[in-house]
Length: 252
Image 1 (tube, rainbow, N blue to C red):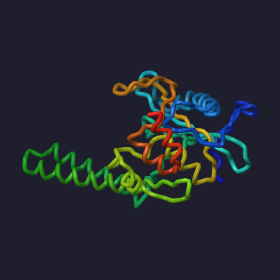
Image 2: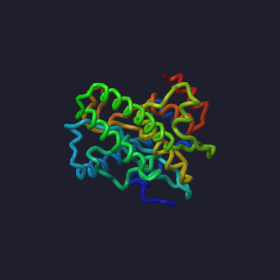
Image 3: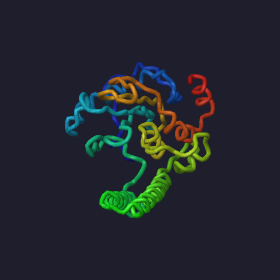
Image 4: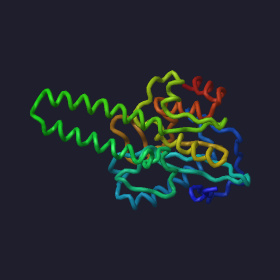
C-alpha cells in the first residue's frame, strides 16, 4: 500500500477516546483526534508553505483538511490536503492529490484550455462584430463541452465500492448541475484516497489557513463545515449514510 502520504501522529494519542464512526462533515463538532491531527498538519503547512513563495498572512487564504484513518494494522494516522490547488502553481508531495488526472484522454484539459485561450485572443483582435459574436458562441459551446468532459473524469467511490462521476452524482441529487470546481474540495479528495486504499475514515476536519476571503468571512485556523453546494451531493454519495445526513439536516 502507498504509505508515503499518511502522516503518523507525533502526539501521544493512546489515551484519546476514538469513535469508530466518522463525524458529520457538515456538523460543528470536531472530534479531539481530528483537532490533534489538524494542529500537527498546521505545523506542517507553516513549514512547507515557506517553499511556495506565497504569504498567507497577506494574500488570500485557503481551506485545508485532514482525515484521521485507521490502517490495516489497526493503528491510526492522518491524511492532509488543500481545497483546490496550492497558490502559485506550487506542489507538495505530502498532500493528497486531485481526483482528476491531467493526463486523462491525452491531456484533453490542457488542449481544451489552450483552444479557449486562442479563441479569446481572436475575439480581442477582431473588429468585426459578426465575427466576434460567432467566436463568442463557439467559445461558450467549447467551454461547456470541456467542463462536461472534465466532470465525467471526476469519479468517486462510495462505501459500497460503487463508482460514479460528478455529473451522475449531481443528477441523482436535488442540487441540479454541479458548480465549477466540484470535486476539488479537501473532504472528497481525502475520502477517495482512503477508500481506494482500504483505510477506514475515522474523523474529518476542514479549516481556513491565512487571510480572510473578501466575499466570505473566514478566520485563520478556524474549523468550518464542508461546503454544501459543491461537497454535499458528493459526500452523501460517498458515505452512503442516511442517518448521518438526516442529522446534518437537523443541524442545518
